[in-house]
Image (cartoon, rainbow, N blue to C red; front, side):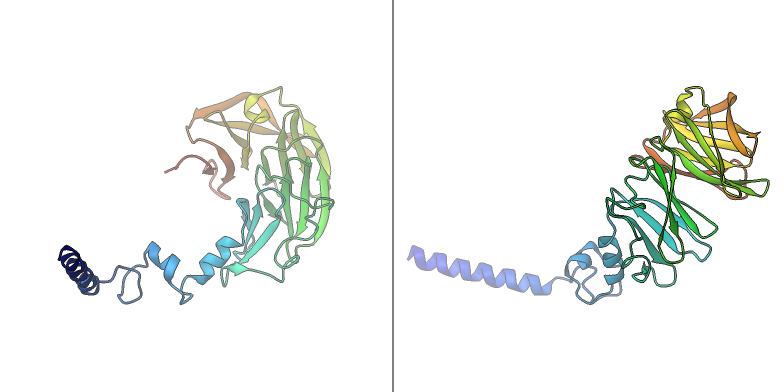
Length: 275
């Protein structure tokens, strides 16, 4: 009798559970209501409504730096030696016709264009993408139009901060490292290593940007501004009389300056939210 009562009770419980499940409103994002897709949609939806997002995200390995061309296309440099990929602005997808199936050419371990950790930034000038390769101690040059490898600029030091900036109509490349600041005039390719006098804010920075006649760095919760002074065909940061301001932003690996508004900076923090 007890077993019979148990079976009946279990049957009633199952029936109630089934009735309740069909009586409840389906959760947001199931495709039956006009609502904002929920996280559940990412797991269950097979309609492809979010397919382009998922495809793009899965095909990038830990993006570290990015830069854009005049058409709005985005070039993303990936962590380790996964290379640079191009996202087309028009369809928000990777351009698989660029480079080798969407990745810049010559990125293997033995190639002239391996990007082995790109601290600093990536910049485009005159159709060339410049990307620092920290552990190779070089700046790689990649052709913007087709992703071909154009060779390297040998710095000979672990590159930390990096930027390209136009002063008086001429583009100059700046790369900070432990022993100084490398600068290169891109109009005539004359180069110079400027002494930074062991200034910590130039020596240890992983973020750097130039604007007007100033070079900015971020290190130890400080944004520092150095005057850029002419030195032959190049410009060097002047370590005397530089200015600092405290800004606690965590681990900053990217910084860029507004192209027209002097002193307006944008920083990318790895570990903090910046408002």
